[in-house]
Image (cartoon, rainbow, N blue to C red):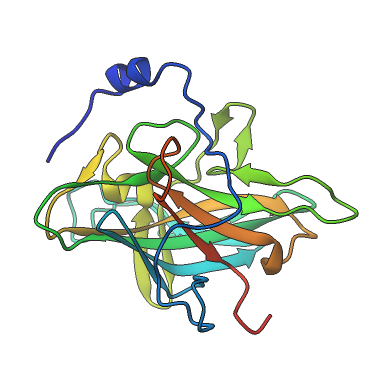
Length: 226
């Protein structure tokens, strides 16, 4: 599996901004549950051969996480470690818990996007929040909670509908820039938005290359009927 040295990658990127600039349309493909080209939760978008499926995008005030596997013991959890802990969103805020699956069904390694404010792979995953008349201005959110330029990552494994997922950054590998042929990885990441934000204002973006056209997949978090 090909990996990059983080310092070398950052040096090569130089002044390239970590957050992609959002344009007015999506150049991705998907099954579009509303009969159009718009992707929603459950849809798969294919960009440059990489299949990206949004499995969940839940607005919630709290998430329960369990320790990551560390080796030793049947489930990798050291003796005496609490099985779960609940993380509460800040006052006046709420979480958006996202679960994604990335799959490479081609015969070649493919670049993958990762959540976070630092570009260490081919691109990144972020949450786009639309403004309103009373709350003007769109914004892009990377993994949260965050303070300034130093994200405070909520680590651990997240269980949804009976399936447990590791953080996507760990599922892909912290410095992994490619997904090998025939491989897939599923994981979760967390964003934080205001408590007044509704699903119709939210769009998840997986940008494989912020500097190129046609390498971005988008999903509306609101259901097609909303």
